[in-house]
Length: 335
Image (cartoon, rainbow, N blue to C red):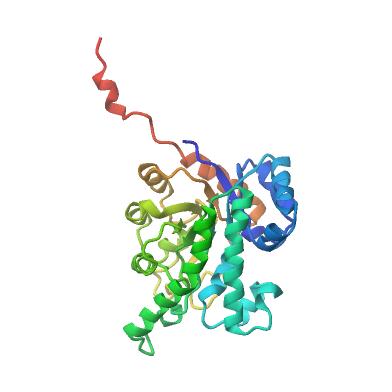
């Protein structure tokens, strides 16, 4: 059960797709988790332009790479977010932004997520990773007081917007792997429970397990894997380092930039943070996860050209398969 190790291209989308493929291949990655931004992959072009998908597959083949998942975090974020503001304008293409009318942005983003499912099937993959957005993340501090009715309405809004998207995923035989992440409808353990309930536990909607977001929230990434074992559709290897305990650095990050030592936590290159990687990989063996393990490289304090190959070597050294038999099976041997 040797699981492929891939590189998520989202943090490399400032580079041409072929350059990222060349780099990843040279470092020894098995494939790419392809981001749907930059020139890496365009779901609209995939469904509208003859030859677009084949050109991408040919390029991957040129560098000996496979694709096991595509990701569309940025457009997924806009499906439910409220407010829609300058942050979205900065990350959304004109096709989705349009005139900036908030509801129009949400509707166009939803249409792209439907096309992402269609494009994934054309590409030959069965998993799309991404975000959902949330109309109630703004209530996370619960002040001014947010009533239960307000929170309930947020989960209803999520279900109403995402169920039609998931209908297309079902029709295409593709699954959506939501990344549990602050700012999303499911950002910790209990909001994940509530989110799955909101859509009736439909199989098209599962989870992308990224333990970096668990570490700084003091959540147990191993227990999460065990409890949601039937919903782990994809794995991202990203690390985080806690920097609290000095009486000044706060859990919320203090609106400080990445790599600022005054932050209470930061993303760091895989293997440099507080994620219990060996235990995590052992747990993935226990739950029978056989999909790709994708390195999502984020570290504002390290050059990515150093970090990406180093992260690959680290994951390879820890990502061992479970044995075919328990060690004590040898005790039963008879002459």
